[in-house]
Structures are given as structure tokens and as C-alpha cells.
Amino acid sequence: MLSRVAESLFWMSRYFERAENTARFLDVNFNLLLDLNKISLVENPNYWIALILVTSDRDSFNELYNEYTARTVTDYLVFNRNNPNSIISCINLARENARSVIESISSEMWEQVNKLYHFLQSSAPQVVHTDPSGFYKEIKNASHLFQGITDNTFSRNEGWDFIQIGKYLERSDNVARLIDVKYHMLLPENRSREEVIEDSEDIIQWMAVLKSCSALEAFRKVFLSKIDPETILQFLILDRTFPRSINFSVCAAEDALWRISGSSRHRYVNNADLLIGKMEAELSYTSIDDILSKGLHNYLEELEERLMKIGEQVHLTYFAYHTPEIEPTEIEEALPFTGIGGGRAIWSQAQQQQQQ
Image 1 (cartoon, rainbow, N blue to C red):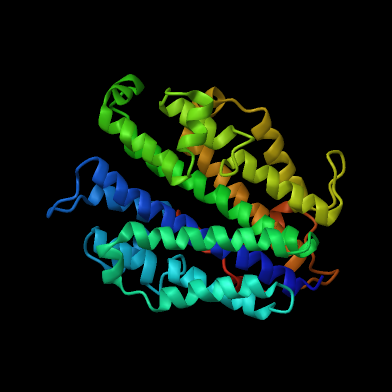
Image 2: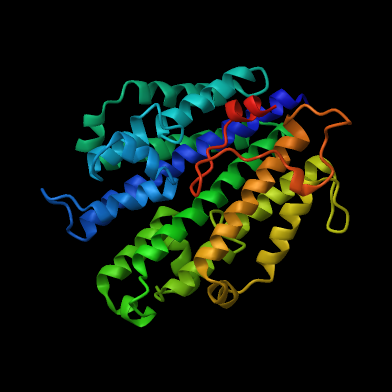
């Protein structure tokens, strides 16, 4: 497979997943405010700043807006074309990638990408403010339909594997960041875990964390009515059966990478396979007590950095142009990852090409 085709399939999938996750976060936040009876003429900035922290674009946001409100955050995360992580930017980029490999994807996949693209082009901010739930449901359903069409119309070849790698690397990164931000907002240092659990408002917010990942029903089937931070973290980070957990996503990305390279448990062909194999093994033998003893923020921050490294190695191995003289032999020599200092890395094809 041509590296150009593989790269476009990878990014098409990753951008679509990113757009869905952003819509998911916004939708759950609106519903959370309704559940808490926080919808009023007076805005609640603490509930909106979390969404900017999830995408780690706070400095960029502050350059454009003076306050955190439903309108400013929605405009930035949905319609702002200068924000590379906004829904409209992600779908635009997904469509451009799909267009560049239109001969390699099914006509149904292209039609679905194009349909969502034109839906967003014709949508106005006022539509979102009057019916946010309906708008975000449209985005999520479009993403689910695209994934279903892909599952049923795309041959299980190398292209399919690159689509899976993009989707699951993006998904695990988004879940890790969501947990990190929400956990520290819900569990301040001056409150014990018992105090949080006894507060009905906090229980509603923890349920919102699960809803952000469409995990509430699946969680209840495993833990019944036991809603507390430890069990939620255990489910979203370590569960191997739920398709939106970090562990499941890493395993799925690992399987796809190994199918392409031919790596196995005892033989790694390249650095990307090595890094994701180490991550999968550690997740398999990690307990929630190990994570909390290390510090949840430190653990998730390290996990996000390792996911970035895996993405870099995928780029170096399969997408970047190499010559024998410059090809890296050590993991530490990976292509620098371009992103916002201390925040979410905005890793895009344009930035990678500029660095080559």
C-alpha cells in the first residue's frame, strides 16, 4: 500500500473520531447542566472551562474570547475554523483525506463524509443554541453510521488496519484527557472520597463522565449501582471488554499494528509495535490501586505522552520519507511532536509535512 494512501486513511479515521468525541463532550455537558438545574441567565463558567481543558486549547481560546459561556465555548469547539480541533475543522480535514483516496474507499463512505460536511456547512450557531441535543445527536449518529458503513464495505486489508489505528489511538487519548480533567474538578484535594460520594450532585457529575463515553449502561451491568470514582476509573481505564475504555482501545490499535508489520508477542519489527506492546502489557497487569498510588494525573499525563510517541513512530515507520542515512534507529530520535506546550498536541498532516 502507498504510504500516501495509508496516511490519508489514518487521518480520515482520526479526525472523524475527534469530531465525534467533541460532540459527545458538549452534549453531555448541556445535559449535566439540566440535571443539576444549572441552566439560568447567569452562566456557570466552571462547567464550560472543563471542555476547553479537555481539548487543551485554553491559551488559544483566551486569545479569541473573554469569558467561558455556552455561546463562546460552542462557537470555538464547533464552528471556529481557526481551531484545528473544532468539529467543523475535523470534518473538513476528514473529507479532504477521503477525497484524496476516493478510489480506495467505498462510495457509501464518501457519501457519508460528504453528507456530514454539507450538514455542518449549512448549520448556524443559533441552531445549536436552540436545540443542542438534536445537533450533537446528528453528529454522533453520522459518526456511528460512517463507522458502520466502513465495517461493512471496506476490505479487511492494510487500509482497514490504518483506519483502526487512527480511530483507537484518538479514542484512548480523548478518554485519558477527559478523565484527567473531570477527576480533578470533581475530587478537589480538600475533599475526601467519602464526602464526594455522599453528595448527590457529585454522583450526577460522575454519571456524566460515564455518559461522555457512552459507558453508563455498560458500567452498571458490571458494578450494578456502585457509582464511585475508583470503580469508574477502573472501568474506563482498565476494562478489556468495553470498546471505549483505554485498555480496549490500546489492544485494538496493537492488533492492527501487528497485522500490518507481522510482529508478535516475542518479536517486534519496529518501534511503534514495541511501544504499544509495552503499553498493552502494563495495562494488563495494572490495578486501580497502582494508578492511584502513582497519582492519577501523573499516570494519565504519562499515558498521553506515550500515545503521542506511538503516533510519531507510526508516522516515521509508514508515512514519512526515509533514506538509509537519516532513518532513526532509536526510539528517542522520533520526529518532534508539534503541539501546544503543556496541552493537547495538535498533530496534523500539514505540520508533519512541514517538518520533513
